[in-house]
Length: 136
Image (cartoon, rainbow, N blue to C red; front, side, top):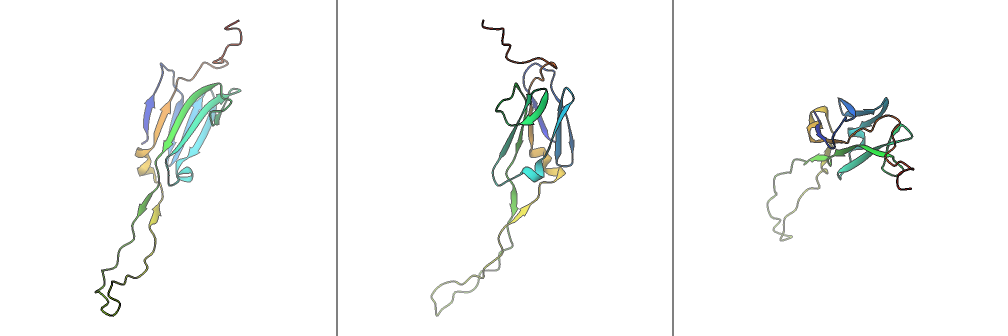
């Protein structure tokens, strides 16, 4: 199960987790992210915002933050190393056989405990964070 951190005073968006997919819902708009498909060799941070009443990825043009999903870097299984050979007396050094590279391990449902979902207060439906009448 993913780690969930609630920021703000609430109410917070609803979320559900199925396998490696996380779905976030705020006022009837849902955004689904497949964490296994989005995982890379570096930490991936996905911002989710409300824009025009819909949830979308990215912060640009959003009216309010809804959630941030943090997916850890992929893990790798090191290949088994062959037993070290005896020194090559003619060459004066060691000779190693070329081995296969490390194998990338897929993110599984059990690994989802390493994923962090930060939920922000879900604004009331129809409420815009920036009221144009303020400041006049």
